[in-house]
Length: 571
Image: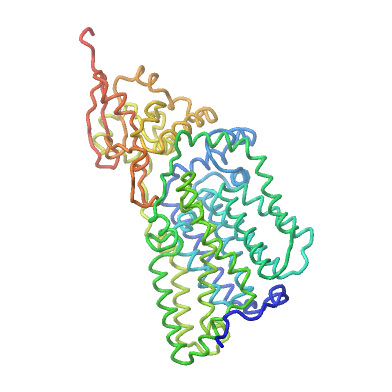
């Protein structure tokens, strides 16, 4: 009779603490310290080469506002389609540590580091050191999504840390037979925090609830109070609902995200353009696993089969890991059938599912099961594992050193000759994001303008983003007039005051982006000009015989256009 991989069910087995590999020695602290230091130093290095970009400036203006009341008023407008918790905590962080790029980005990086530590602590209850280290570091130190957000002043560090904390609680509640009211309250609070950090928090809170229900069903237990603690946390979304409805209007008549295709799904699952695990490290991991398994099979096939058994102590963590990995597929289906919402960083908690999956696979290697750290001599397996772990730890630093230093917005938009010749002319930036960056950094920021023109924004060739950009700029002007009152103006107002000016447009300023066009490129790889093709130049200048538009250059990326109003014959 063929032996089952799973042992007979024993409810007590799953509810008692698992002692495998839980002792922590100085070498493990060294690994943890090195991994955290790598993430934080990576943030510091990249921040020294990178200026705030559009999304980060949304965080900056909100968190740097001196008045909490005015910040809450701005939050209630059409700016961030994001719940309040990050901005509330960021506002407090700003008052303690300042508004500099490094300060706000370190807030994110510390969240990533906290998520790493929480995930490590969760896995070490079930898996030995090297399985835990490989799973955690392979994702946290190579994921494009995590490394990008590690040095971005946005809410994703907090989102990932809270998700990791919820999974730690999830695992804890399978190691205690009785749950106290305090534990239920903590569960309620962490799920409420997830929901109020990102709109996708609801998906991941629901994923954890589903994992509880499925695992409890497999173990023949029923804990309605536990499920209720999560369900009640969702009710707190009611407090955010009025702001959400106002913020959501910025995405009408169209959202900036196009519909995903199957390539986007393959990218999330690390098959096409890997998002959660670097493809080269993933190949290296597969080769190491294949090598280890080949060694084991040649020694003892029976031992190899026996090592594949799944212990019931692994069941809860494997269920939650599997569900987290499947969440992007559910969101992909929603994006195809209801509304496009599929974007890699929104699904950053799914990276924790990949951590669990990798640790589980690595744990099935016999030397890892026993704990490599317990061996008295370094075998070839332990040496290979140690080298691989070290490469993972230094990868964030390697990516940071190779990060290309950015030019300061407004400092190198055009050739020096054009810049000197037309220095006194007003400059129109056609993209909302580009204007936001120039308005913040350019030395002559009052000389840069954004034009509010609804007809141009909703033009069918303008792409997905311009209507949202228009509404954002209106909201910036309403809530922060000290920064935007002068240079966010209507088309009529600007053209009535300026007969000669420059326009900074995308490199292909005549490009059209039909909203309903099919596009086989990955959403994650699309450039801004693929979703943002401002039509103001075409509608108000090129089609107007009263204006002469001269192309000057696009050597420094931006197309620089000189616009001159022609004098009428009667003048």
